[in-house]
Length: 356
Ligand SMILES: Cc1ncc(C[n+]2csc(CCOP(=O)(O)OP(=O)(O)O)c2C)c(N)n1
Ligand SMILES: [Mg+2]
Image: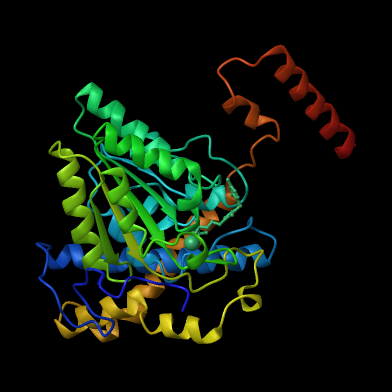
């Protein structure tokens, strides 16, 4: 198995893989649990839809979210509106939970950075440059602390990102300056084709917090209640002035790294099957059905409603005009240098030649 943990370190769990309650229930209403369940379905349907569109030439490269819905939803759900969220490309469901409109995200997977990025959601645009968002999260948290603003920042990256300098610098600053930040490592076992075992000789990524003086938690990342509970406590701890927490969520990337990847070339089918049995949506669904919070007949209907919502979002995104090819210059600097202005003019000249 690619995912290793110290046998002495048991990830925090509230629901086991069969959906049975094995821990203490967090204070959470039935309505809230159903909304978490629906958000996980939204994440999965969105992922499958964008991958289908990519196959038809209607979307860009996309990294599958499947299997990681509990971590993505659970890390964002306890956040308050003023809290900051800095993610990679793998946490689209977190952005949806935090309020980024689905059409805006679908538009971004047509290859356009939305001009109307909803800044009021306090979500940063996704980072493709591995690990950088962890520094952004710590910086936002430090700024909030200095300003006396009751905001907490959450930064999330993958297992592979922990080998970047940025990750280590972020943890160091978080610890030294007691930043109100929660740094989440979404350990899905793989960084494209590089297994978790090649990222660190440490028994867990959570264990690495100690070296930075940052308290850490190891959580079953496929257990929505455990992720939600851990994040709620870590976020409120940071808000109360008690500093940062590092959270490792143990999960698994069921799909390909992206639409440009073929994982059958580097990993065992048996490993994927073992993790399918720990599916985060199926697990929570069993729990909700057993508690009479969700009717079995309702599941298919709910998935169809979610599919319709995603299809509508795609229709809206596809009806939006494309951005001008030179518009990215608008986001480089408030005023362009003469050299940048010349580059923009060059680009426009080239485009006009190609079109004519
Ligand atoms: C600085 C940097 N180096 C390399 C890449 C190419 N790259 C894209 S995704 C990826 C693997 C990231 O793995 P992980 O952090 O585990 O995240 P996951 O994709 O599993 O969510 C790499 C190396 C990049 N985007 N940025
Ligand atoms: Mg990974």
